[in-house]
Image (tube, rainbow over all chains, first blue to last red; front, side):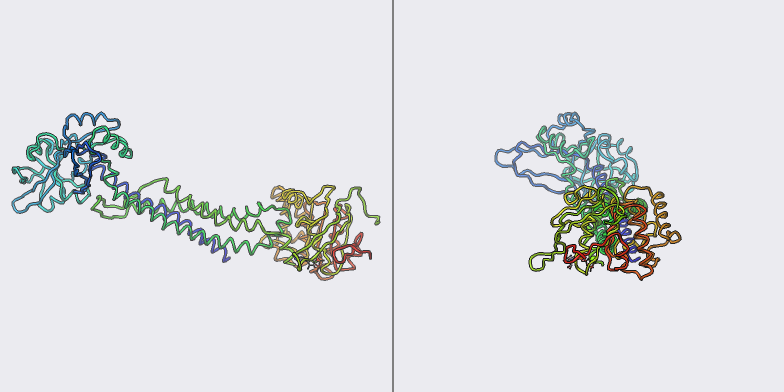
Length: 403
Length: 232
Ligand SMILES: Nc1ncnc2c1ncn2[C@@H]1O[C@H](COP(=O)(O)OP(=O)(O)OP(=O)(O)O)[C@@H](O)[C@H]1O
Ligand SMILES: [Mg+2]
């Protein structure tokens, strides 16, 4: 009776272990996927920036408003150019590159946005709307106002929602963008939210040609945001482009490495933590089986004397393990699916690295496979060792000792 | 020899069987060169003082243990060199064991216990249970067939154990003090059943007993002393 209860506890442990495993993986990978979607939709899969000739020149990565830029400390003789030198030509070459779905030219610069009473320093992103929409989710990120108004008006801007909050801006409001050369009177066409707070509180979008004249950069100096068909291949494509174009080309995986590593660490550590539940259940099962083998030694001896083979004996124990395993997996996965669904309904407001109002979950069959594999290994070991011990019982010895 | 002995080839032939336990100083020579034959339908009683090697010999004959030297022939085939699976299969089909203690599995009913060797031999559950009940009936236990083993009296349990040893119609039945735990009445009854079965179905029976009355009722008696057979 006590044994049945202990076995039941082990079964429960495996059910919950499997379920927790899947649920935590669904969450961590859900958030990770969501994060990747956000950064792909905002800064794109690949960015092409400064042209260089000497690859061996010292490169320092400067992290600025969530994107990576590079300063080349040229050594003697090394030539470098900030930004893309001949956008027209490179644009064509990039667009023709295999797997590329779109190229958006962006001219970046600094400015200060002024209203009557307040001012806020911003990073200007000069874009061609149609081009940029093709390589980003900007269209979906506009939460108020309209991207059409922005597209049709060269004197219009899109502002990040945190800037809008600071400056109390609404679509249609007038603002002044001040730079080192001139000031522009502009109209707020829309407000966007990427969820990445660094961007939402500093970025404004402006028409590319307006930006060129405002920043006094009539040619060159821009960067490309490139969309590709298979974002997971970005590092390879980027490397190839860098080789071909002699420009600095950075994939999103390289650009967001820090965050991606954080997510990976979270995913792995939660997997390890939750696996211990399964492991402990396995230990409990092992215990039950080990006691069972001792209790049943005499029965095993008589079965052996009747012509049951060592294999028959171990199968008796393995079957019980298999039963617990199958029940554990079936109910564990069921519980996992229900819990995952339930969790995806829990309201949770997150802003910072992405924007969501719910728990984000990822429905991925591989999480179930992993949980099942761990359960199989644990239960197999927990039943196999006692089963082998039972199979090795020497009937003559036991019978002699019993009498 | 006894008139009841029949059959040309002996079911069992034992040649110069020796077995010892332990090493060095602690070494015990339990069997020192035992030879004999047992024929179908013949009931042999092994008698002798405690510790003379009776059980040791029975476990060797039952292929539960390997002798140090000597050979056991079952239906003419040598057994000591046979591989484990052969020996296991023979234990199931050709040998029936009865011990002093019944060794029934208490979670099972009487008929389920009896059916176990049949199930191992590949007989389907219903058929095995039917056969088991038939044997239990012949042992006067038809009304107890569906009782759990631990709800039976000592004598009943031992009769169930005998039914289990007989159910596969083995060639050789080995019984180590089968009535050792029973009172006189039960002891007689169990013994009767065993003898009747042996004579009706024709296996060779080798039983160990300390009861001289019972030993007298067997076809022959083989007295043992210090690991050897001796003249009476
Ligand atoms: N596992 C063992 N290790 C060491 N010695 C053993 C072992 N089993 C039996 N012996 C010894 O072997 C000898 C024969 O033992 P066995 O059990 O065959 O005697 P037996 O004739 O069956 O006695 P009994 O009538 O009391 O059952 C004894 O001296 C016993 O002490
Ligand atoms: Mg004995």
